Length: 233
Ligand SMILES: O=C(O)[C@H](O)[C@@H](O)[C@H](O)[C@H](O)COP(=O)(O)O
Image (cartoon, rainbow, N blue to C red):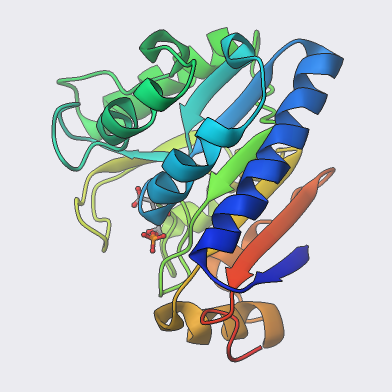
């Protein structure tokens, strides 16, 4: 795990753009495709600012979600809906490059269906993302994997449903740790003083919280943290 301390959100955006450019072009040059997982929350803001600066072959990108809310695509709460409005028009990406949640089904059904879509995208069941873009909540959750939740120990389902998310909305699907830790790269972008305590608990005190369990087996985890969030390190 590598911690990159930066001054502020603008520097998070700058750093993120250069990491994504390198990782995406390495993946495309080696394997002809770039498989990336996107998170919601503040990650949306950072990606909407950083991705338009990335020099890459957009048509080679396959985009999925690290987690997604089980809501209508046109809902304010839809992560894909937000990227569709705020990111796609600023890049060379097309809606069809995103692996999106089936609409009008239960969270359980959505998780099963999403797994099927990933099998098609990855040509099998080894879901090895080149990059997962992650956020972390003030409680140390990442994706929709929350402290003390049984899903933290899920090892059979690559994509699971949660219906009691402490962060609204309650119904979501989420990648589980076997997939997360199978990624080549995971990047956290974390800013703001409200995260300083949990950043310390994970990075300094080594407390067992979900974001701290992101440790790719044959890959790298990067924590891009601004001064406010790193204040207690
Ligand atoms: O859809 C979601 O809710 C996100 O994927 C979620 O996991 C987010 O990354 C964290 O809650 C951190 O959110 P912030 O970065 O906005 O604090």
